[in-house]
Structures are given as structure tokens and as C-alpha cells.
Amino acid sequence: MIKVVNLHKSFGDLEVLKGIDSEIKKGEVVCVIGASGSGKSTFLRCLNLLEEPTKGDIYIDGVPLMELGKNINSLRQRVGMVFQQFNLFPHMTVMENVTLAPIKLKRMLPEEAEKKATVLLRKVGLPDKDNAYPNQLSGGQKQRVAIARALAMDPEIMLFDEPTSALDPEMVGEVLQVMKQLALEGMTMVVVTHEMGFAREVGDRILFMDGGVIAEEGTPEEIFDNSKHERTRAFLSKVI
Amino acid sequence: MGFLIELYKTLSDAIYFNLIKDDRYLLFIKGLGVSLKLTLYAAILGIIIGLLVAFARMTKNKVLNKIASLYIDIIRGTPAVVQLVIIYYAILGSSSLPKIGVASVAFGINSGAYVAELIRAGIQAVDKGQMEAARSLGFSYGQSMRYIIIPQAIKNILPALVSEFIVLLKETAIAGYIALDDLTRMGDIVRSRTFDAYTPFIVVALMYLYVTSILTYFLGKLERRMSISD
Ligand SMILES: Nc1ncnc2c1ncn2[C@@H]1O[C@H](COP(=O)(O)OP(=O)(O)OP(=O)(O)O)[C@@H](O)[C@H]1O
Ligand SMILES: [Mg+2]
Image (cartoon, rainbow over all chains, first blue to last red; front, side):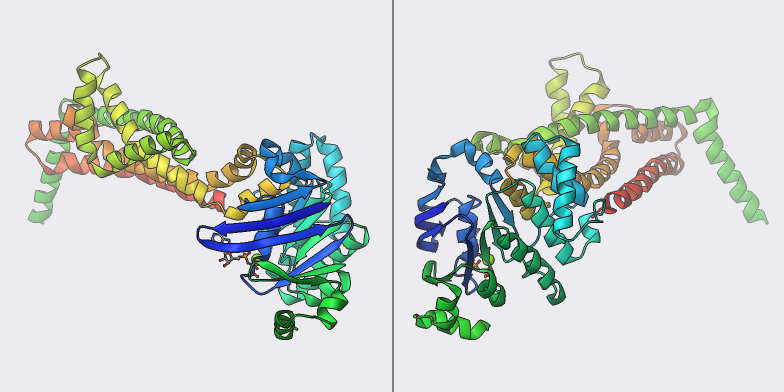
């Protein structure tokens, strides 16, 4: 569904991605792990062109992203993203956060969008917060609203950039639970995470990034239990 | 006792000669009206110019960008009095605009530069993640500005805008340089008739203070309103 070929990205003189090749299949859950600064976020952000690659190609369903031009907006509608800092719209209620994009971009009727949002908010475990503003929610609740907001566009793939890193420890579980549910329902997901337990349990495939390349990839067993690379083992011994 | 009688006589004389004789209080009221009108016109013009210039500064168009920042640099780098006099002679030479019109244009052009910076700062103060979240949902840049960024920026901008207009009202006190009969100049006119340097300007100061206090009161209310939903 997504194919990445020789992806490079530099910020000025700093080369952050140094040639990434990967393929993400429909329904697959890919977890990206690696040390801070190894380029995980940059890689993820290239997948919906929040960062513009310096070199290389990304294909979504065979369509090359770099040639989309103005159509990038309709592509992004098909790719949901969840951020570490939630990035909910603070001037809107939970319901408005979740319904804005479907109403404005998909021309959905407000009643219809609200009906859908109600279903999604129940699904993420927030059935009674429709009229709350983001600042009235806990971190875990905010992140679950952010997931519902992304899901409201019916994305074919969801990107998560350290969705639990900004949360108090006791709230990590509730967000991971929602993500796990999503994975079980067959959503295609790319998850940058430091939650190795989640990666092992939910991930179909693990990408270990180091110094701007994918240093090793494989099933959770291959990476966590039988890693072939010294660098992977060194990283894992530090985080587990 | 004698001292108090003396004080009473001085005060009542001051009030009589500076305010009551020849209905001089009317001069102050008229002057205040001119100052307020001038501030209002200049503020409206300032907002219009400010919006355009802020927009010009934020587009990717290099030429517009340069022109906008040059304008801001010139206005902020020169005294308002000098700008006022230059514009007065530049416009007066070619039109029949009344003085208050000329002054409104001058103060509007001056205020526009400050308003533009304040709008830009208000927009830039919105967290970068907001634009990214909007774009990631599929909104275009323009839609993201309209639905997500501007509504939040307005909360930053409105209170700053009111402050700017409080400053503007005080700044218009230099309109006397082009012989416009604003509040400050009325103080001067009364002084020249009563030869009392103190009283007219204390009256003038109190009148400015009265208006700015009202504006400041509303500013406080506005700031509280704007911070409720953050
Ligand atoms: N917009 C940017 N401008 C300049 N440098 C950047 C930018 N974004 C990221 N970088 C740099 O690129 C490198 C990789 O950053 P990236 O955010 O992709 O790392 P990461 O693996 O996600 O790290 P972390 O685990 O800390 O989130 C870092 O050195 C970072 O400073
Ligand atoms: Mg990161």
C-alpha cells in the first residue's frame, strides 16, 4: 500500500534520512523504534509530506507522492496522523474537533458527521465529552480524541508519532488499548514508539532505525529475541 | 484659615477663567471630539493597512515581502511627528482634504505598521502543531488558516489591538503640529488666552485619562474573555 524507495531528507547540511527503502502492506502494523534523533519522526512525516523528501520516491497505491502537486490535500485525507503533542484544536469542543474535517472536506452534513463522531468517541472510550474543550481533558483523553479526529476521515492508514510519550504513565495504557483495538480491526498502521511491549505484542513488523537508515527489520521475535545486529541489541538493552 | 481661603480663591479663579468664562469648557469638549474622531478614523485605516501588510509579509512573494518590511521599518524607525508633517505637506499640496482627513491618513499609515506586526505576531504565536494537524487532515493552507489558525490568532490579536489604539489616542496629541484643533491643542489655545500654564493641561490630562481608563477597563474584560477557552 505504501512503498518507499531510497528516501533521503536533509535539513540544510544535516542529512537526517540517508536512503530508506520499505514497504507497508494493507492491514499491517509496522512499529518504528530507534534512538532519539535517528530520524523516526522525519521518516513518518515524509509519508504524508509534512516534510518534503530531498530525494527518493514514495508510492501510495502505486501513485507517486511527489507528483501529486495540489492533490496532496486529498491524499492527506486518506492518511490519518496522531501527534505526540495531540494538537487538538483548543478553540473547538471535542465534537467540533472530530466533525470539522468531514464537514468541510467531505461535505458531510453536520448531523451525519455528529452521528459518526458519536460512534467514534464511544469507540475511543469518551462517550460523554462532546461539549468539553481540550483544556478540560486529561492527556490520555486528548490523545484519544485526536485518534477519533483522524479516524473521522476514514483514513486507509494511520501514522502515530510517539502517541504516548507526552502522557503520564497511568494514561499510557488507555491510549495503547485504543490503538490495539484499531490494529485488531485491520487498520494499516505505522507507529513510532518507545513502548517496546506494545511493539512486540501488536506489531507485525519492527523497523529499527539508526543514523538515518533502517538498520534492521523483522518480526518482533526476530528483532527483540534474535537480533542479528550489534546496534539493535545495544539499543534494546538500553530501553528494556 | 487664611491659607484655605487663599487656596479656594485660586482654585475658583482657575476654574472660572479656564473653563467657564466665554464657555471655554466647550473648547475642551470640542477638542476631545476631534481627538476621538481622529483616533477612530486612524484605527480603521490602521486595521485595513495592517491586515494587508501582515498578509504581504507572510506570503511567499519576495517583492511584496520586501515592500511590506520596508514600510514597517520606515514607520517604526522615524518619529510620528515627522511622518505627520511630511504627509501633511505631501497631501495638502495635491488635495482639498480637510485637516482631520490628512491627520487620519497620517496616523492610519503610522498605526498600520504596528497593527501589521501585531497581527503577524498573533498568528505566529499559534502553536506550529496546529497547522500540521490541520494539514494532516487534508485541509489546504488557506483552509487551515481560516478554520484553525486565524480563530486562535484573534484571541492574541484583539487585546493587543485595543492596547495599540490606547497608544494611538495619546499619540494623536501631536496633531497640533499641523494646526488641527485636537484636545491637546485646545489646551494650548486656552493657555494662550488665560496665561495659566497649569490648569488647561491638567484638564486635558484628566480628559485623556478618562477615555483611556474606559478603554483599559474594556481591555481587561476582553483579555479575560479571550483566555477563558484556552
Ligand atoms: N525541521 C527541522 N529542522 C532542522 N533539523 C531537524 C528538523 N526536524 C528534525 N531535525 C533534526 O533531524 C534529526 C532527526 O530528527 P527526528 O525528529 O526525525 O528524530 P527522532 O528519531 O524522531 O527522535 P525522537 O525520538 O527524539 O523523536 C535530529 O537531529 C533533529 O534535530
Ligand atoms: Mg520523534
